[in-house]
Amino acid sequence: MKILILVILVLIAHFQYRLWLGTDSIKQIEATEQQLANLKKQVDEKKQRNDALYAEVEDLRKGQEALEERARDELGMIKENETFFQVIE
Image 1 (cartoon, one colour):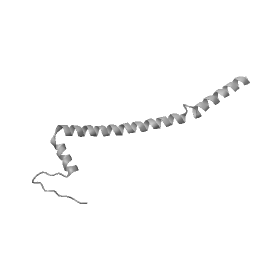
Image 2 (cartoon, one colour):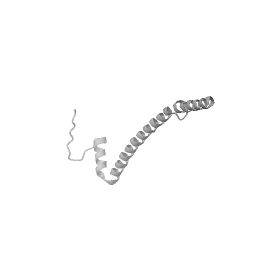
Image 3 (cartoon, helix red, strand yellow):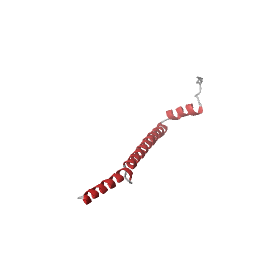
Image 4 (cartoon, helix red, strand yellow):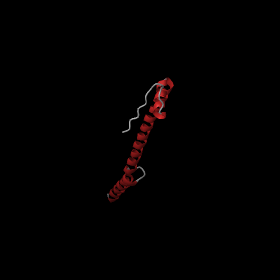
């Protein structure tokens, strides 16, 4: 009977060790889940960036309005017979 109790205690100790300190421990699983969450966040951010770039490419392909807007914003260009007002805040 004592040997059976000893075997059960050894098994319990072994499983507790694996649960808390082993290669597939709770701590290791939580760290992996955190890493997975970080990677998912990065993927979402990059997907949003890609979607914005795809939308910009489509705008540039479709018409002159996007080109004109870009020229006005980035290069400060204006059309003939327009008056340019610069607002300083």
